[in-house]
Length: 488
Image 1 (cartoon, rainbow, N blue to C red):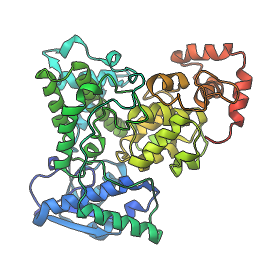
Image 2 (tube, one colour; image 1 turned 30 degrees about the vertical axis):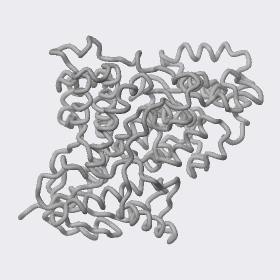
Image 3 (cartoon, one colour; image 1 turned 30 degrees about the horizontal axis):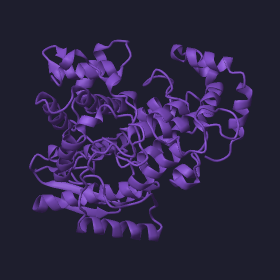
Image 4 (cartoon, rainbow, N blue to C red; image 1 turned 180 degrees about the horizontal axis):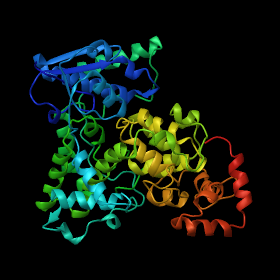
């Protein structure tokens, strides 16, 4: 019996195609489960339909309500192990032939080997990242890291240039929409009008690669135009420059359109040829071969219940409508308003906007971590069930009590002021914690410490911040102010 390769929406690149017959399914029910960013829905549908067009006579392409209409009862299916617990259960129940997962620098077997070697030690990102480089030879000179250092974070934390509106880099390469995109847009309009699906945010023009050809063009453009500046300004933000020096490759990577090892090798080659500084190359390699692989492996290592069974800081506040509707105009704090507006427009924000603005705000106010995790999955074009739990539940919200991150990523307005141009036009003052001009991040930071002190007092990394809290002469007034603060 000839097997038919069922390729899921995260497996659309040639790395998942071994040359035989292919099955692609566009299941409308996927878009009806929960409100989704329209740009995300558009990208998923565009990528599936473009892949079906590329495969031609080799593909069996179905546009149906549910997967079951196509696959129930079939005995000819073969799959590369899918990227979520629910999908893995489903293909096994169907009796499909399951191949090992692909699409990452390291395999699940590799990670299991490394984790076992740690004994009872913590599975820290830095240790994993160094192990990956040593095992693969990426940015290595024999047994030593290229340049003599593993980590160039110190060089990659520069604030944006003073008085700059943008980084002054060329506009990123953008895909050109076609008839397939027009058809997707018509379908999304119709589904929303029928009331069967709910979409939020803007759709168009499409900014993220939906084909392997587009993804390779985006990679080439990043290497040529922005790689050199990626490192130093990796954490910086400017109001007039939504992409900064970032690659915008997370979405096509998560669609399976690029092989991450090929991406890493391409970037490393720029350093070897003397065309890119090591600090920028290392920072980018860390994101792909380190952090991205680490999040993937932790999704399986921590278990399916991870995102629902952890709430160490007792955070139960429901997400506000300003988040769920991406209503940036209703938000007063300029940094948060701008970050949510960028998300509304593009379905994307870079990691500092996610962690130190949106995530920091949610952490300080005790937003329900499971709700926040689901929101990140559905609102971001690169959001997947595997990528968000350790990022949101662990790193951003510290809901796991320290499994992923050793301390909460909470900060006051000073960090945002240093790394962006948000604070200048804002009605709040990042240096003020009490009164009508009090920055909700600065005051919120102290209110957060006050609320979580009983839980965090045993965390040695929080000893200094908590000592500062106890010395705060206006602690009670700041806490009361933040408790009564209305709106965002």
